[in-house]
Amino acid sequence: MAKIHISPFLCLFFILVNVIPHSADETQPTIFILGDSTADVGTNTYLPGSKVRANFSHYGIDFPHMRPTGRFSNGFNSADFVARFFGLKRSPPPFLFLLTLKSNHFQKHLLKGVNFASAGSGLLDITGPNMSIVPLSRQISQLSTVKDNLTALIGSTATETLLSKSMFFISIGSNDIFGYFMTNSTMPRDQFIGILISAYSNHITNLYTLGARKFGIISVPPVGCCPSQRLLQKLINGVDGCFPPENDFALAFHSALDTLLVNISSQLPGFKYSLGNGYLMTMDVINNPQAHGFDNVDSACCGYGILNSEGPCNSTAPLCPDRRKYLFWDQFHPTKRAAFLAAQTLYSGPPYYVSPINFSQLAKDY
Ligand SMILES: *[C@@H]1O[C@H](CO)[C@@H](O)[C@H](O)[C@H]1NC(C)=O
Ligand SMILES: *[C@@H]1O[C@H](CO)[C@@H](O)[C@H](O)[C@H]1NC(C)=O
Ligand SMILES: *[C@@H]1O[C@H](CO)[C@@H](O)[C@H](O)[C@H]1NC(C)=O
Ligand SMILES: *[C@@H]1O[C@H](CO)[C@@H](O)[C@H](O)[C@H]1NC(C)=O
Ligand SMILES: *[C@@H]1O[C@H](CO)[C@@H](O)[C@H](O)[C@H]1NC(C)=O
Ligand SMILES: *[C@@H]1O[C@H](CO)[C@@H](O)[C@H](O)[C@H]1NC(C)=O
Ligand SMILES: *[C@@H]1O[C@H](CO)[C@@H](O)[C@H](O)[C@H]1NC(C)=O
Figure 1 (cartoon, rainbow, N blue to C red):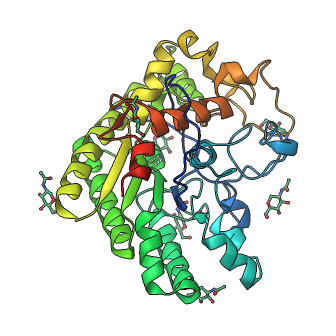
Figure 2 (spheres, rainbow, N blue to C red; figure 1 turned 90 degrees about the horizontal axis):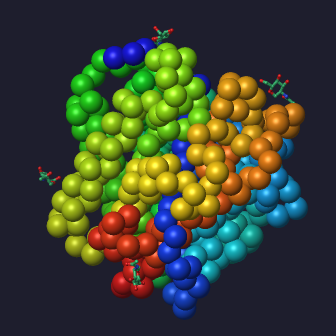
């Protein structure tokens, strides 16, 4: 297998299909969000020494008031759009931000949900070493603290009820796959995927034990197609296009996760889930950009050099002419429009992309 270098971060992107938008309905569940940079709304800004941050321009250029918030996007990300479909204004704030508030404000926020996602994180604790990020295991410990705080606030019965009706949105796994390639691992693919799935199984079981019942999960996109990995394909193999071995892992991950969730739902009473196929959603756009309103599905909108991906997106980087026409915002992440389309598909898409039910059904189904 080719040896490659990958910048030591995170993440990804993923996507969509055009489905008629659905307006927010009467059910407005509390939302808890876990995952990586695709769902991070500023967590790493509050982590001392974090090396994976986006709290500077041009990030946030299409966010209200053009404000960089730590989101790895030109505007809202998929966590925001999922929250919007459920009737919220945007994602709930980062847990680490809530910790900076006075206790009465902290408590008020908890009832509406919390975002724990941290850019660079993975299913495995060894993913994102020394970058000061919050791995999924620690995000779940933070949720456990939140549960204690809710219990102190509204009592244990009401807390159990609230958690059982809440939506748990999880977007993670890409950084583990990047880590595998970055460390030039020689472990066979299926063995590595087995380790990831076993970790995912433990995380889900831990969340279930804390009281979570409704899981809205998105699998990994074709990570080999993000601009940074296309650049590798060009430099290493001398050809244009996606970097195939990473996509192969992403596809295997989806299929194993699908199997895991079927199994878990047969074992844990009351467990409900919706799995978005991040691979297929993104690939269908890449294979047919115009049908989804994109002109460019290979370059970053913000960045330097070949594929705007040789240098990172920062405040002096060139910007593409029309951000709505690009699938990728930076070397790794989708644009705001791509994130919207992904969330729309998760919320109201057909079983081809999100199964066995979509997120709107998951929210209704008590
Ligand atoms: C980003 O966050 C870090 C840590 O909180 C802070 O030191 C830095 O000034 C922030 N950058 C901007 C542009 O706000
Ligand atoms: C992370 O830090 C530890 C201890 O400081 C060091 O041994 C290890 O090599 C570092 N890992 C990476 C990938 O830099
Ligand atoms: C939240 O719960 C943790 C753990 O029980 C506790 O240490 C912390 O003080 C609580 N925070 C608030 C604001 O109640
Ligand atoms: C992986 O292989 C590349 C290319 O041979 C090498 O430059 C890099 O240092 C290796 N990385 C690790 C973590 O061993
Ligand atoms: C389903 O899960 C159980 C318990 O975790 C495990 O023992 C079993 O092997 C799994 N079955 C399949 C088909 O993966
Ligand atoms: C942005 O990145 C480029 C290319 O890596 C670098 O030359 C430039 O100094 C950076 N600008 C800022 C403001 O950090
Ligand atoms: C998504 O779920 C809704 C139920 O809320 C259902 O009516 C709809 O048919 C589903 N969408 C598709 C395209 O299957």
